[in-house]
Every structure is written in C-alpha cells, then in structure tokens.
Image 1: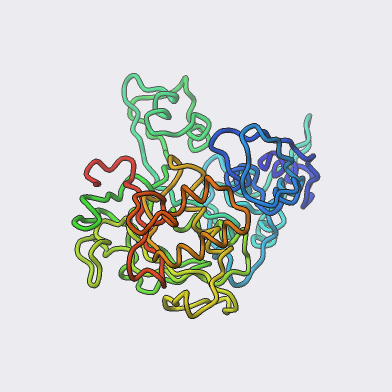
Image 2: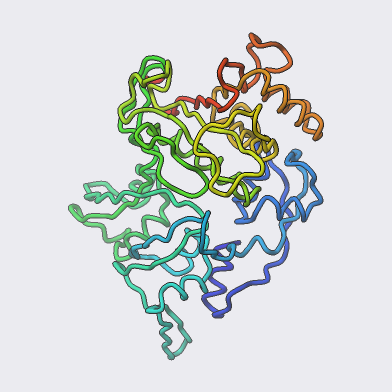
Length: 403
C-alpha cells in the first residue's frame, strides 16, 4: 500500500494521498506493533480506529487500518528523531523505492534535494522522470531505521542463472534485477559480475560460550541515536541481535510515548567479550543493563541508574518497553530473562493487574507472586536490581557455540 502511494505521488506531483481504509484479519503471531509496521502506520492510530483500550488482539479479529497509514509521518527536524543521512543512488533505484525504504514523502525528498528536477518527454506516450542516476547522493532524514548493507560482487560461473543466484544469497529475483538492470537472464556470460546488496547485521557477530564464561566475536557497538544514552560507550558491545532488539524496543516506546525521556543504557559487553569489571556475566554480548523510565524528568533523562524507591516510576512507558522485548509469545520473545528485584516486580505486577492486563500475559511475564526462587516468568528476581533491568537475550540462531 505504501509503495503504491509513493508511486501515485510521483505520477501526480501531490504530497498526500487518500487511500481507502482497509480491513485486516489478525493472524497467528500478530501483535499491534507488527501490524502497524506492516502498514507503515502507528500503533496509536490503529488503536483509535478500532476503539482498543489495550494492546492485545485476538486470532481472526478484524481490524480497520485507517487511511493515514498510507502516508509516511511528517518529517520533523529536532531533538529525538533519526539523523540526516546520505543515500547513494543504486542502479534500478526509483524515487518510489527510496521513499518506501526510508519512510519519507516526495515533498521531503524534494525539499532536501533541490537539485532534483522533473524531466518530461512527449512522444506516443507521456513520460515523467526524475533527474537522478546511479552514483548520485540524496540527502534525507529517515523516519525508520534502515539496516546497513554490504556490496558483494558475484562472478558468474557455468550453470548460473539469476533465480539460482538470488536464492543462494537470500535475496529476491526482483532485487537482483533492480541492482543489475543491464543484465538479462538470457544473456549471462561466464566471468561477468553481478552486484548483490546484503544486510550485514546478522551474519558476522557471534556469541561464544556462556554469559558467565564466554567471548564476543565481531561484536557490534551500540551506536549513538535518539531515545537513549550510553553511559559507557566502551562497554556497549553486543551481538547484532542484542543491539537490534534494544533499538527496536526503544523505537516501540518512542512510537507509543513520544514524550518519554532518553533511556539510560548501562553495560553490555567489552568489544571482544570476556570478563568485565564488576560483573559476573556480560561476557558474550547477550547481556544489557538498562534503567527504568520515570515521570517528571527532562527529555534528556537520567545519566545514571535511579532507584525506583526514590523516584516516581513511569510504569506505562517501562511496561511498553518490557512487552516489546517479550513479544507476543515465548517463540517470538527476544530475551531469555529480565532480572528485576522481587519488590519492584510486585509493584509492576499490581499496576498491570489493576490496569486490566490479560492474566495469561501477567503469568508469562512475572515470577511474582510465586516466590523469589520460582522458575517461572520472563522477569526473575536478582538482588541489587531495584535501580536497573538486567536483560539476557537469546542465543543468536546461527551461533553454534553459544550456550
């Protein structure tokens, strides 16, 4: 839907569209965050359109997707938004595909790139194209995070065809054709090179061993960005999955609670893992210490871990963060455990129960009220965790030596 809208904008020169509202039937494994991302919408917009008071949805439930979901959010410059980037135009890129990738409007691209001109050619058919070519640089400010890609040059060998090459590299045939517009499947020659762009996020970093006795191979450092503060950048290394999960959860919080303060991010792991001072674990890139969200603080937020007994906790915002990490089921959860002191668990449990959260969700999330030694719940007791949350992420799927 979003791609169609962008193409319509290009054809008409208009800035906004008026796509009709859609009806979506909830499938197994869906949650509001997933559905919102699928339609380039916001969770709040879907909740309001369907009169939902909670975030839970039922299997086969019919949801109305409002018309505003077809348009990218307006570009707002200022604190708390993604930084301006430069996109290098690749072969096969169109303004529609760039618009879809970064979640921006045609008006935004035109405003930030005045060198773009519309070229018109009259003949048998009327054509309208934008004056950009491979290698050009476009300046824009994304509304969604785009994972970095690495360029691979593949040399064609005997027996190759585009379909087989695409399947072997985990890309679609359409993507392969887009990156290589001059290559025809019927005219491939041995020795020719194809350009393939691959996401570099999940293929390189590895967690080896246990969190209490392990190491991190080709770790990823948590980047600077909106919505959080790194207390010790030199200790903010983790697996790519750990970093992605944290950033995705923070993005969910910012979509629900745009006025929330920056989250304090504490220690993850050292660049190569191994023993980290003042920690027993944090050795293989799967652990992260983060603060809680609080009320009545400036947008900058705390630069240290505040005690929940001394400062008013923002239960709603912190609960959104915890649920984003937990997912809608154990299979979708991105964490093994989240360690929070038992007395703080109790406060969150009572708040969520009073709010009317589903009983199954409470049972799945909390160890409380079963006792500090109960082996149930994603959130477990650990002494000394009343001022921060210790998150232990799951082993990356392809890491064979992660325990």
